Image (cartoon, rainbow, N blue to C red; front, side, top):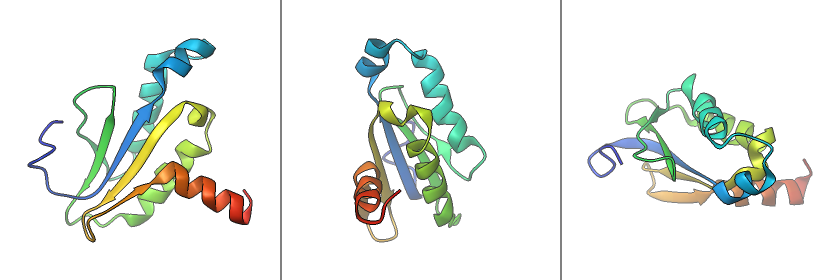
Amino acid sequence: MKGRDSMKYLYKITVVIDDDKVLRFQQHDLNAIYQTVRDAFKDCNFKEVSDTDKELVFVIEEGKDSFSEVGIVANSLYDSWLAKYLKKMEWYDASDNSTEDILKEIKDFDTQYGK
């Protein structure tokens, strides 16, 4: 990643699209799906630091505590038309050195409390 090891961040979200599923379903252009994910982050304090389209990486730098934007972006992607193509979405929180599987967390919440 562009400076992945050297970049100081507060929050990081990684997104992996299931390219095989996109190509198999033939409903959407693969590049358009990646652009849609990027567009979801563009109006927030997230900055893209991806090296490739295989794993999209977005960070909020230290000093920009925009915790709510993590939930806003994650839920908007999960609730959108492209959710069926999300293979992985993880959130890294440098403040407590934790990692969460966002897709699992949202599914578990929906199962327990309803959508």
